[in-house]
Figure 1 (cartoon, rainbow, N blue to C red):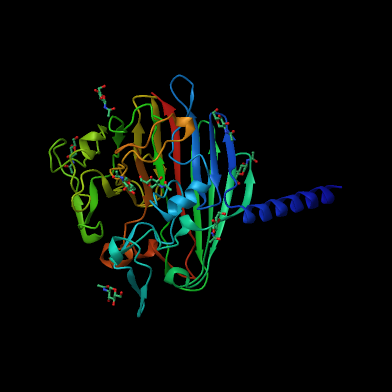
Figure 2 (figure 1 turned 90 degrees about the horizontal axis):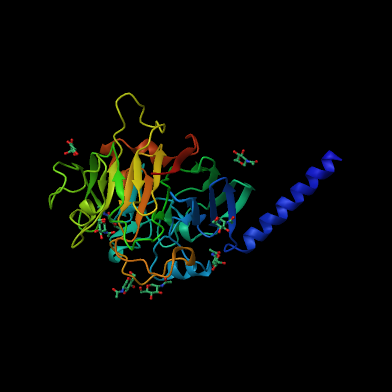
Length: 382
Ligand SMILES: *[C@@H]1O[C@H](CO)[C@@H](O)[C@H](O)[C@H]1NC(C)=O
Ligand SMILES: *[C@@H]1O[C@H](CO)[C@@H](O)[C@H](O)[C@H]1NC(C)=O
Ligand SMILES: *[C@@H]1O[C@H](CO)[C@@H](O)[C@H](O)[C@H]1NC(C)=O
Ligand SMILES: *[C@@H]1O[C@H](CO)[C@@H](O)[C@H](O)[C@H]1NC(C)=O
Ligand SMILES: *[C@@H]1O[C@H](CO)[C@@H](O)[C@H](O)[C@H]1NC(C)=O
Ligand SMILES: *[C@@H]1O[C@H](CO)[C@@H](O)[C@H](O)[C@H]1NC(C)=O
Ligand SMILES: *[C@@H]1O[C@H](CO)[C@@H](O)[C@H](O)[C@H]1NC(C)=O
Ligand SMILES: *[C@@H]1O[C@H](CO)[C@@H](O)[C@H](O)[C@H]1NC(C)=O
């Protein structure tokens, strides 16, 4: 009897898998007391995340679209990367080239007129249809088999991403990748656009951001490719040239309206902040918060822990009031500075900067341990 039951369970699970393969735009939801989240296999993408505000009203605190089909259209047009996994190599690769051993590899240079690669090339992990391989009421796992040579990357890579919600309200992301047959770069991240005020205000400029260990950034050139330099975020707080110091809690406008270290003609935050963990901790220690973000409108406070080595922070300077917010968030549009993207990731373009000593976290072969990246987001109210 027991055997029969589990056989039925297996068959049911298998038929769910087939359905998932057939429809990458079918939403899947998970929940725990005080939190729920919805995902699409298309990009293994987070499309909504509800937590309660200080008045106990549920608020959807991430950006996205109501109609799942809109994500496919977005990829083909504005390509905002609302909520997916980005990879095989997140962020930028200068010139779209890198060398492993004696071989130089060229991957699609899909940004800045062919001057660099962004988020894994013209068909990144955000634009792939992942398979649901495990799920229960509070957790879901998406799996992607990335074939050898696809988008020019050497070797096949198998990735499982597991999203879990627990109570007290926490979202955990765990990304496990294995290089199956060659040495290859692997650098994955989540690309979640946050608005903890759930668009009660049109911008996040009044949110308070605190990144206690982020006293350095990766220096970038006019098209946001790393120069190889590492720069201090620098004191004083509110000066036109030195606004990226969030090592004490500070409102985002103090950085977003003054910083000009985000490429040619750009004002705002679009920087990779290096996590300099405290002396007593190991480099992969993920036991303490590396970022806190608080909205004055909802009182929602998010606290992020991760074993990744940096945080790319983007203050949505490129939004211009043309993309509508979700129905759950009112009737407005996503305005300039209407969101904050937080990408826990490794040092960007580290594959082209062996002098940084990050290679073992970014290049993986069949004899390497799996790459295991995780982040947790705790929600409280103040
Ligand atoms: C998540 O919570 C919100 C707010 O309570 C609710 O409207 C929505 O239906 C929930 N979603 C799921 C999938 O349970
Ligand atoms: C892309 O942006 C344009 C202009 O902001 C907007 O009209 C269009 O709806 C957007 N497309 C998608 C798919 O979001
Ligand atoms: C707004 O941004 C979108 C996406 O980047 C772009 O397509 C559109 O031309 C912009 N519209 C205006 C009015 O600047
Ligand atoms: C840039 O890419 C080209 C191929 O597109 C390659 O020949 C060249 O060596 C690369 N330059 C650098 C500095 O890596
Ligand atoms: C992924 O699914 C979407 C939505 O069904 C579809 O438009 C797209 O062609 C699929 N992509 C691939 C690579 O199969
Ligand atoms: C759901 O799966 C997750 C991940 O495997 C596990 O940690 C959790 O205990 C499971 N929850 C339930 C309710 O079965
Ligand atoms: C920020 O808060 C101040 C004071 O409460 C208010 O005057 C201002 O309009 C707010 N700005 C934004 C962008 O919310
Ligand atoms: C950042 O600001 C704090 C004061 O808020 C200061 O103690 C610290 O030295 C500054 N960091 C740098 C790198 O200038």
